[in-house]
Picture 1 (cartoon, rainbow over the protein chains, first blue to last red):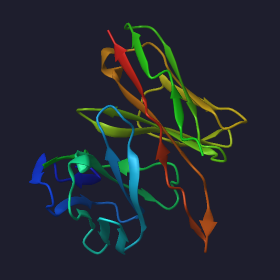
Picture 2 (picture 1 turned 180 degrees about the horizontal axis):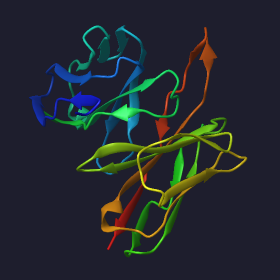
Picture 3 (picture 1 turned 90 degrees about the vertical axis):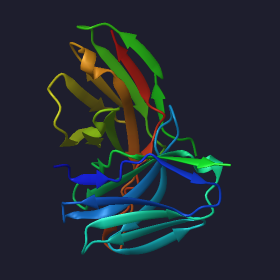
Length: 112
Length: 118
């Protein structure tokens, strides 16, 4: 079983929809939780970075972390065609600063 | 501030050859991590270097190695290439910013080197 499981998708939504992307994990030592966006043939781009449990909002993006359930989510409001990409969740332990464990990614398509 | 740069962007090699990939981190970042991305396995951690020392290592065979120079630039080497080594190799840099006892360490990725082994 993988340490990080991500809803596989693919996901296709109409423009303006609210998108929910989710990951579960098994390692309770994970303290930092990230969401990356990756466009085709590009490197991952850091979207959200959260320490421990709670919510974090940045524009149309909201990240939620529930450590008691080992569950993290990314919500995208008012989705745009430019949001079409693969979204990767990632997490790491406090002591393993440079080593992140990634989900397999969810490919999102936002249709105009 | 310039981002993480990786060279070359594309490489084609044949089985048995070796290859060296280069990564220049964001200015001021001292940690460089390498990842392999394939459709079947996703993003897999290879190793991390900090201040010229390997600090973490993933579960890859010894054919995969790396090093870091005093200016924080890093190289990774793959010897005796196999078909299964075809992948996007990504480099990420981070800076250990400590606030209230917590580390920052957001990782920023380069565009990757796409390696094809024939």
